[in-house]
Image (cartoon, rainbow, N blue to C red; front, side):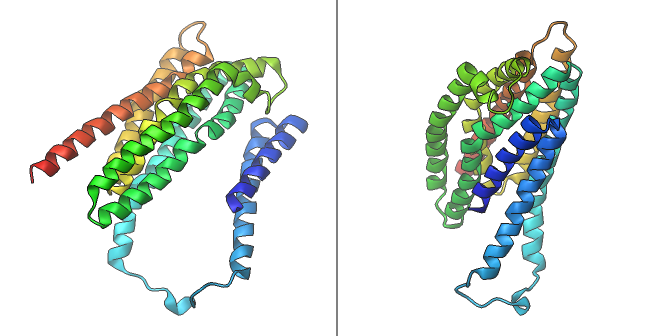
Length: 279
């Protein structure tokens, strides 16, 4: 419920601050921060009013070096990857800003649309991680592998639909956030590249969740950094130096990165299979 409310606040905040008050990226950032603040506040109020089925107090809190160490070992690589990947997209935005105001705004609008397009594969990442971890803990790795296959298959259906919308109707999606024809056209051009990525992320995100559930978070971090800093940013930079480059060509750095990351995930999967069979 809190997530849904935060999304609504974020969307209406974007429409109000960007479309009505013309605050641009600052308005979009403010809307995001406000949505997160509302989410935290509502969560706090719900927790305060909700009666728990068990007693809980400060005395129940205990610190275990072993548990904390395991959490840090598994969690730090994931957090670092998210941070660095976020930085990589900021670098891409900086490069796109050199194309002009309309192009910069178009990419900003496209990124908002992409957050919607990627909802399904992102959800699969989280659920896959939890499901795989539970089955590995229960000593049933075969079911975890079946979950990976089923997850890829079902999320790919959503990916095809989202890809179709982004490629053929990206202008309609972009018009939700902007009324400027040039901005909409630039956003649609960028979204056409993301349409390709919509067909790749079901594989990548499910693999990411699978490896997180298998406690291979260090590998997840490495493949994420490789995709961001060795593929996505270099491609965007090189293409941006080509005269007459379009935002579609700029955006191709994202599916190219996903393709490399999927390849690394497949290599890791084959290596793990051989290692398990050799035992």
